[in-house]
Length: 111
Image (cartoon, rainbow, N blue to C red; front, top):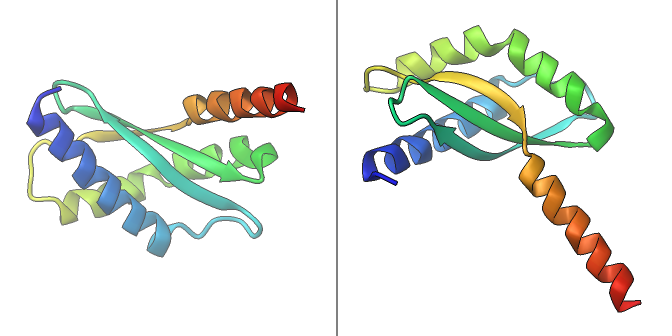
């Protein structure tokens, strides 16, 4: 992976984490964690992967973030001194869920 893409992903992860912490007025009882950022090679878009606790409220959190994407994008555009600033797309971190399922299976096997 080119170093520029890695640098942009790292920068987006840092800035979006900060924005979500300060600006993400999530519904009560909802904890959202940014787990990964994957920028497209042309740097026009980036997929931001999240993890939600409790798991049953993931759709609610994604819906909330998708409604606020314009506002979050505007904050990001002001903070970053790069052009273009990738457009943000939100997604659930399926890879993390798969790893947890595998760990649960290993625990059952050990028993």
